[in-house]
Length: 287
Image (cartoon, rainbow, N blue to C red; front, side, top):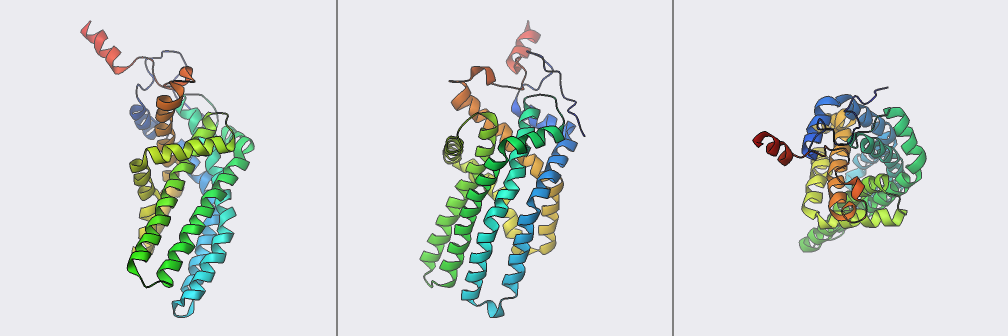
């Protein structure tokens, strides 16, 4: 398995990236294999959920004349089935965050070993948080279908879909923050979830942008082109999912430094970055 060939873990090592933007570029440039392997591992845990979605789509397309009551029933029962399938997907995603934390902290190790350590340590938590998100998706799905199929008032339709989508958006971002938080700190499940929800709401514009990029666009593609959906799904399965873990990890760690580490864990501030900042470099050159 791939072993990190990153920089030596030395205090004040000037060769380390000086900012998280630089670290993002470094990982994308030098650790393609890491992002690809994490994506494939997460894809394996996502197969049951993907099959559940395919089964639901086939059932819905086979509904005679798209009768509303039949569509609602299929979506309702398939949505219930998919809740634990979300749990299975997030078992793998939880472990992927454990690997990425090691990478951005510049700590050596093998992907396979760290990934399975993450499964052992937080697999249950990953399953539970996945089920939480699956439950939100279930509510969003059946509520949206209900207001569209059984209500003729345009305002009620818009309000219902808008409200449930907003809840889904915040919950989706909160779960991502949870995964990073729970791998960084020793917290109770509810404590990590509370922090994740706080970050999602405090930085709502970015939460919305992330939701649009990772969930909204694929959803829109389902109505445009099957092949384009398959294409973007392949990109995520082979590399993109690992990239999303990297982005969320780096951004959430910056928030941890700002809101938590600066007060309670000062030793963790800028963990994995060079102690020598760009301003220090300029001073040396000018001197």
